[in-house]
Length: 401
Image (cartoon, rainbow, N blue to C red; front, side, top):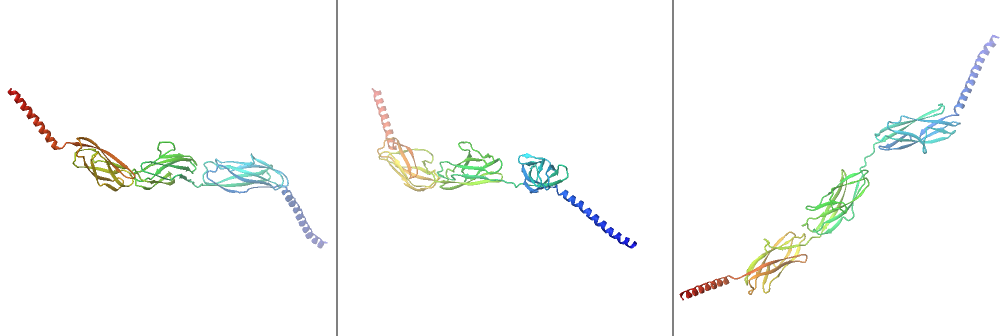
C-alpha cells in the first residue's frame, strides 16, 4: 500500500499542474476576446511638413479610426501649440472637439494652423490627443512643422519703347514713349536715367504734361508711361546717335536703347566782319569790299554761288565766284569788287548780295554812297573864289562912285 501511495502522489501532482495550465489559459483567451471589442487609432497623413516663412495658414489631414466592434465617441484635445499660433480641428466648415465613429470606420478631419506672423524659421510641433469617452483608450500624435526661410524674390522691372528709332534734323526735338512695368511685389521708387551724347539734352516727363521728372513711384505690378524728350546738339553732324535709357530702384534695373538719326540741317549766314553794311564809292572807280559766308547748319553744304542785285550799268565781281564745299561751323571770306557806273549821280544806292546753294541761301543789302570826285571839289572852290573876287571888285567900283 505504501508503494501504491507513493506512485499516486507524483501522478496527482502532474494532473494538478495540467489543470492549472488549462484554467490559466481560459482567462487569457477571455481577456483577448474582450480586448478586441474596442480599439482606437489616429494618424497624420503627413506628420512632417515644411512651409515657407510668412505662410498665414496651413492644413494637415488628421484621421481617426475605430478599430473595435462598437461605436465610440472620441474626444479631441490640442497641446504644445507654439506661442502666437492658432490651431483647431475642422470637419468641413465646423470646428470639432469630439467625433462619433461607428465600428471599424475611419473619420477624416483637418488640423488647421495659423502661424504667428512673426514666426521665425525653425521647427515647431503641435500635439493632438484623442481618447474614448470613458478614457479607456487614448492615442497621441505630433505634427512637426518646419518653417523655412523664404528666398528673397527681387522681381524685375520692364522697360519698353514702341518706337525706339526717330529721324530728323538738329533744329527739332525728338519725343519717345516708354512703357514701364513694376514686376516686383512691392511699391518702388524708380529713378529715370539717360546717357546722351555730349551737348545733348534728355528730359523725362509724364504724358500730356510739360513738367520734367527724375523718378516715378510705382505700386506692385503697376504699369506707367513716361515720355523722353531728346534735344540734339545744334551742330551735331548727320549720322546715328544712341541714347541708353535706364530705370533703377536699388539693384533692380532695366535698360533700353533709343536711337536718333540726324539727317543734318542746312543753313547759310551772309554778313560782314564788323556787321557794317554800308560803304562809299566814286563813280567809275572799283572798290574792294569783304563779305563772309558761314555754314550755321549741321551738314556740309556744297556748291555755293553768289549773285548781286545792282543798279543799272554797275558791275559787281566775286572772288571766288563759287565755294565747292563748306563744312558745318566753317566760315569763308569772299572779296567783292564794286564798280559804279560812270554816269552815276551822287547819292545812296542799294546793292543786294546773296549766297545760294541747293540746300540753303541767305542775302544782305548794302547801302552804297556815291560821292563826288576830288576834281569837282577843286572846281567848286575855284567858283567860290571867283564869286568872292567878283563881289570885291563890284564893291570897290561902287565905292569910287
